[in-house]
Length: 248
Image (cartoon, rainbow, N blue to C red; front, side, top):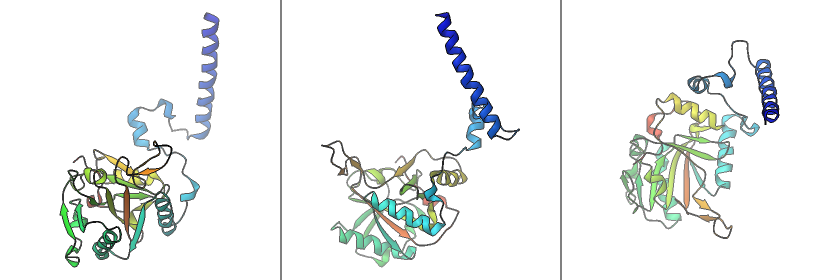
């Protein structure tokens, strides 16, 4: 038994020495190895993992990459020139899908400020969903081109129930909110203040392949995800009104 323990300790000691030597070669003299940092130091360092080469693009190309990945995941995308065109895009989508002309919207200032009176046949109400709403409308905080994923943050202006209970989820996204990797989205979220209670990532409509290994949409949430993309160009700052999923 002692021989076995001794051999084990020898192997682990060799590994520790190799890791220490590697850390010394790759870090500046003043830097600490992650193995010796406290949890607070690790969080403050915001160390990044490997960034995929496919997001090493200028912003217009990142927007195209996001759309490509999002549509590959069964989301649909409508592109409009400005925010004033959003009500018309919502109404046209509902009509095209033979859905009722009524949406339950997040009470975000960015949505409430839209010219809904331009579409008087469309009924817009605000607040959380209790399960009876067929269509929800929410903003996004960011979109990740790396995987075609929407980043939705919680807050009083965006009840989480709107993202999960209605059968159809419509998301308003500005092109300026598209980033390359996930790390950039997290950086921007930290800049807005304290991390919200919930941060959700949505990649296409809800799906499962548990039933005979066949993809079924709408298994655990909306079976339609429609993104209205406002072409406003690159912009680094996002206000609190572009929030995501709340605990409501």
